Image (tube, rainbow, N blue to C red):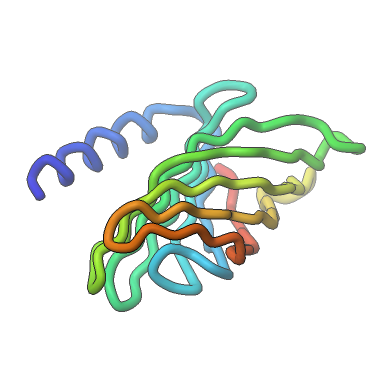
Length: 143
């Protein structure tokens, strides 16, 4: 558990040093619940870290490396794909890999971003299975 805490702390410090951060809420299917704290942290023009933390009957964490493709039609509409690990710390414990395919709109006048995505997952630990029924809506404030 100490190693896990250290890895999370180092990841947060790395992400805090990046530019173009977004913090908000994700509604829909999330590891561990239906609502999560949602954050996006830029790692360059076309890459970013997309993290979700949810609290329910345990703690669910998704940490995805997204590739941002812009624009799609207009300057404010982007699409993205990503992949990364997820973990659910609760009963039962779950660990696996999640993918992401989404579309995002950034308002020009206000610092808000809206996005919708699809997240198929492949669970590796406790049970091994595949799910493709995870959809979500993200509302984030850009700072």
